[in-house]
Amino acid sequence: MGSRQLWILCAILFGLGLISQPIQYLFPKYMEDTLSQRLWIAGLLRAIPIGLGGISALLAGALCDRFGRKLTLVLGITGGFLVGFVFTSRSAMVILVVLCMQGIASGLKSAGGQSYLIGSVKTSALGRATAAYFLSGIFGQAVGKSVAGVLIKQYSYAAFGFGTVGSGLLLVLVTVLVLPRQQTMIPVTEPETDTDPGSEIETDRRRGFLATLWQNYAPIIGRRNVTILAGIRFFSTFSWGSIQFLMPLLMARLADIQITGFLGGSSDIFACLCLQVTGMICDRIGVIKPAIGSHFLILASLFGLMLSAHSATGFFVAGTLASGAAWSLSTTMPRFIKRFSSDDETGRGVGFLHLAWSVGFLSGYFVASLLIGLGQQIPLICAMVSVSVSAGLIFTLDRHQLEETN
Image (spheres, rainbow, N blue to C red):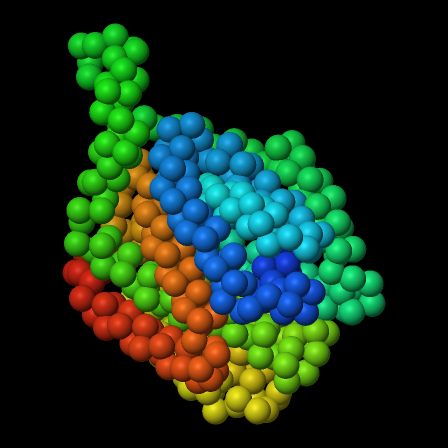
């Protein structure tokens, strides 16, 4: 747990969460307040880039395994300043372009960051290291969201956006200069020993990009446990996408933008505590029980959000619980990946699961934006059904393989 690489990575993630997450969190309210757009348009503008992030994660996974994790992570962190341009524009098309670029960067950041994490610590400490990894980003976004509500209320959305652009550029420079490089570059496609060095490239060109990508990912996707894990990631994140759309929007309607920022900050601080506890539990008893428990807490929080439709206090408490439960579940994912893939497949394993995360998040986010017009309980019910499916999939994983490696 004392790895220098890990602590530098965590500091970078803190900065990224601080400057970029407040804009994504407050985006639905920004669209409603500033651009007077229908909510389904806000959902669509966020859903498309998230989907691109999932696709880019597949490419990023292969990029990590071939060219290195630091390069992939640095490219991903560029999204930190790109997203700032969202609050400086009043054009839906410009916002879409910016968010698409940020979405692609997010896939690179997730694959590069989690692969770097897995390579920075021993397996016995991976649970606590994963908690520290997520905790850093969440604590950063907790501070950022809390401050964002105050600054936007005092100044403007645009002023906050320009501040994000400048801070993000500085973070990219610091990452390039400070983050150590991991010497773990492994060829994704094993070359034939009796051919010249250029033959693999020519073969890849003949097969085409998609065929080469499939060749790299097929061994991972074909494993039953990995496929089930992707299903868990999709259905659980569907509910989280719905919550992320509904929380800032409904809280702002019950209170104001400043209280909405405090909700985001408070829920993230609570998530930090949950991450640390979950990581310690995973290192002590394994990953299955914490994953199951997290699902039940997500269900409880969704039920609480349904009951507190007209209570700012109740909504605040239920939303905070939802954030902690969702991030607790995320803490278990790198450990699952470690168990179900080999060392030279880590990047692709992270990339495949991030694709499942992205598709789940964009689906939940967009569906919630469509159904909110029918009443806020409808998207919450859909989220509860999705979490229930995810919980059921947990019980179909090969526990024997997990127990052998715990």
